[in-house]
Amino acid sequence: MIRLLTPADAALYRPVRLEALAANPEAFASTFEREQDMPLAWFEERLSISDVFGAFIAGELVGTAGFRREDGAKTAHKAMLWGMYVQPPARKSGTGRLLVDAVAAHAAQRVEQLHLVVVSENVAALRLYTAAGFVEYGRGMKALKVGDRYYDEILMVLFFDGSDVTRPR
Image (spheres, rainbow, N blue to C red):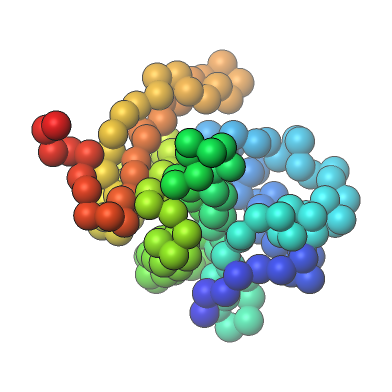
């Protein structure tokens, strides 16, 4: 089951978010060190100001994905899919696709484009996003640095108006 999380879900969200940051530091702009000591109220606030979807299996939160709309007058037609994470035991079960589809359906009612950024080495995520209709439109070279290692990011977009960035202009 996929549903929008509320501030009341903060106690469920916090450990999954921290697990994501600890297990895959290269996949997120934030860090485990930054968020681990944040009080539960910080996670409640995050859930009150963000649209974060949760995937539940047998009543347990096993994955999350966020939606954030741009707020500038000239960029309000765009949004970001962020914070995507599925716990290892729930991977390859279709949970990731359900989360992406839920965020995309939510976005399609609010914006014209849904963007995301994924580490270039995350082949499984690239496959998932491509299968969901996202297309690559750029690359951030050495976009993230974890310790002494750099990671490239692939920029992807899903258009809801039928346009396609891969077509020549």
